[in-house]
Length: 420
Image (cartoon, rainbow, N blue to C red; front, side):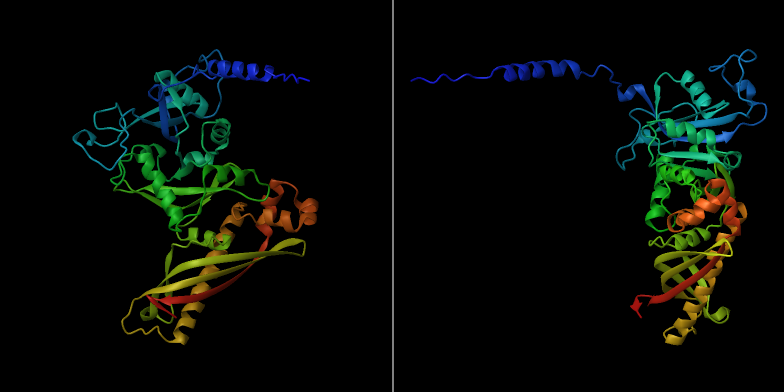
């Protein structure tokens, strides 16, 4: 008795049709060659000077016929990479001399800097696109520099535009410039042939060296959106040798910059937040000017507790830090004795308590909780938050009246290269 075998060929036939059709659907019909893009590496935003209304291009409106924003004009500059000019290695041929300044692209330039004015950042970039043949591309945008004047006016429009632009990376850096923001776009640092990459390296290396907390623009936007925390940005200044100095933290209330810390207070913020990587040195006077030493913080950690006292939040901030004694300013000062080391620890503790307390009070005056104490209350005291705070605006006022207790434990770990 024979057995007849039947093969199912229909799935095989469909698979063959799929193989033939997919290449037709996956073609590069919407491709855009890299040479056809205007790759934006950096953006600077300043307030426009009086009398610059005549420079504004009527791209988004007709002056006198369609309404325009009543806000003052802003000046936006972009740093665009020149195709084929970005160096991929450390070489330095004859054609690479001449710097990276603005103006018309030359033989020795790697970037092109062009600036326009507009009523908003979107309007200004639309005016810029009208002047450039290639499509502006923000996928490689790494640095956004905003002038202090613009920061104090408010970043609502800037944040809204950048957050809605899908090409902008959340790992880009936003900075507040102590002077004109466009000056940082036109800087010619000696260590890098591309100004934007020098700015980027300055901030990334500051994080690695423990000089600054990690604060990408994505982190800035996230902290701005929280009910119990405010955001901050690095505050920088352009020095005379075209190098960049991180001058402090520019702290905000909502979208407006309300103050700037001192450079050493960056270490105070990192201590309160318990950021382990340390990179700051300081002087400690044990007993008189001749008994002064230089100490270097090697590691730190912190712990926070909150209580409700008399209807107000009371925070207990405990910080533990380890230090190295690196240098003594007097040859006659002997630091090997345990009593001397205890005195150094005691004086360092007093200095840190003052630094932490002064920084908290400074932010309290402006109602700018950059530490996230409000978020800690939301997590640990939800009943108090829901009954007495609830909103960001209420916490800004409550933070001004909160009380703090700073506890510091410090320990000398090494004297020079010798363990204690």
